[in-house]
Image 1 (cartoon, rainbow, N blue to C red):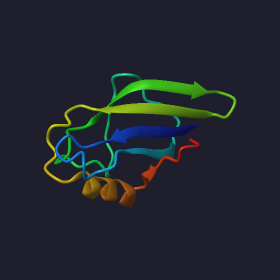
Image 2 (image 1 turned 120 degrees about the horizontal axis):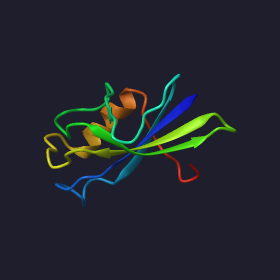
Image 3 (image 1 turned 120 degrees about the vertical axis):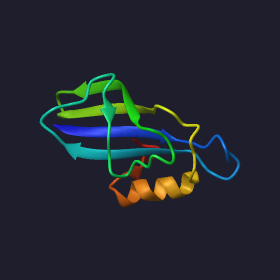
Image 4 (image 1 turned 30 degrees about the vertical axis):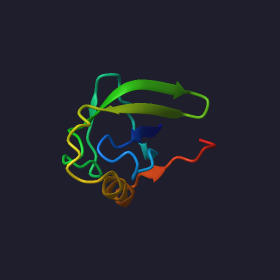
Length: 101
């Protein structure tokens, strides 16, 4: 099944400098996350937050896809700027969602 992890990135420390981004990463998996799971990924940086929790799972059996909405556990950390964090995510397979998605 195609698992689409979705996160929304914004900054509380520099909102005027950083444009919020909705990021997505698609993986193939035989199992799917459930609400309450904590997702780990090499793109996540502990200097920006301390993990992402699954808050919503939407399954489409026709397309064999699963959309997993993630929420940051702590966003007040922000020891690196948001744009640096988004670059690290992109280096690890995440991409910005288009408005059509």
